Length: 163
Length: 419
Image 1: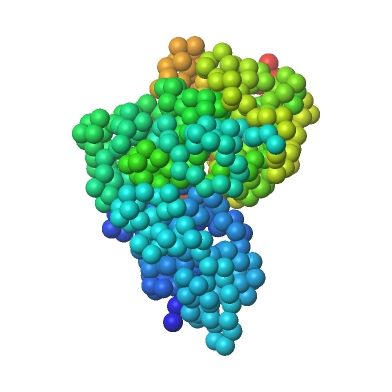
Image 2: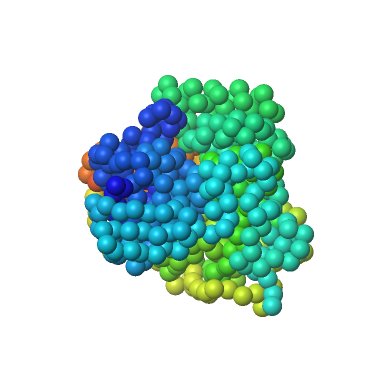
């Protein structure tokens, strides 16, 4: 069952993937193995496909480096829940097809190591007997998500969603 | 109801009146790509089976790790040159300088333009009245392939800078004060619209770049400085490129420059801004003067003014990296460079260098750096427990001489220093 990895407020892109481990520094095939290398060593080795990341306020502030969320995607992360997001990080998540949910209440309720089920389209999250309702992704994102990512969408339709 | 500057620019692009909150697809005037994402950019274009729609609207700048620090980087940079040549794309190679400085110098950001860049500090283009915004590799690749990007028209926060700063107070101090007041998330998804009034309109293009640059540290999508002063002399500013007096803002903040004191941003968050007095005396191992925030000629001159006739304290490393080759040449021509070198500075190739800890000036565990850059996040410049304090070039230079965080006023007068 997918597990929750919980982090605090103001997690920046240097925390998610320190700049010195950018793909063009260490090679395309292994940059993701350095995700959270400073903040939570061992994360990249232990995280499993389908796991969910939980952040506090202003998640992903800092750099535009898309390889930070891309590292998470490579490790199999399909969704993030945060109290709020920094703009570029939010956009990068959407573009890569990682679903960014926003909820103060659910973030507060979830604990590190929780085992949960999350339906990415409806936003229904289940922990044991408890059920949480996350606001489902906006139509724009859902349209792109159904093709995989924004890139996949553009490739298939030759235009942006909603255009 | 009137329009903000962001609404004006995006309405012009859309060809109809648009308001905050609307989703749009707009044409972009310039797409800026940095070396560190070029590989991802190429891969995405290849996946789309696309080439840049308007090659003349794309620039690649080799600045984040320049010259190459290892074999992986060297291979990536070789690919940039070959790709640029093949597709007729402008490549600014090693040594030309930091992307934002270079684009402004080259006239590739103009009043009223939409410029998207693969670096978060692309808000800097707002200094000249361009809607500049940072994006990731996917957005940048799509912008190059289609000539367009999707945007949500942002709400705006109005920041008014009033009056003239006292001697020793700089645009960096003003920018840090703005980030303190807005906080790191206070302008998220918004445009920060900067008004310079009652004397503040004399701020130069470079000083406006410092202000617009740091708006992203308050979360901003764009940092637009309302054109005035030097900008009107340097650019053809269209008549429509001004906010309406009755435009609607989410919030208004005013900063009186005449009462401001030197500021420093304390680890590990940019909005953790204090007066220098609060951290005066903190031991320093390295001082870094440069970056897109403060690597311009006026910044180097401000540092030289403090360093003239003085020496960097024993055990302290002073790195100076001019923001561009033009800045370097100017500093060489007017003697600024010699003053810095005589004081004991180490000179780096124009580029981003140590700002994000990839090469040159990486910090060891426990070390403390005073930097003129824009981020003091944990681990950014090296060891996770190394500390970065963000300050103006004056404060940085004074700290290099003192060996601890200081302002130039804390230093011994030159006569006494040599007595």
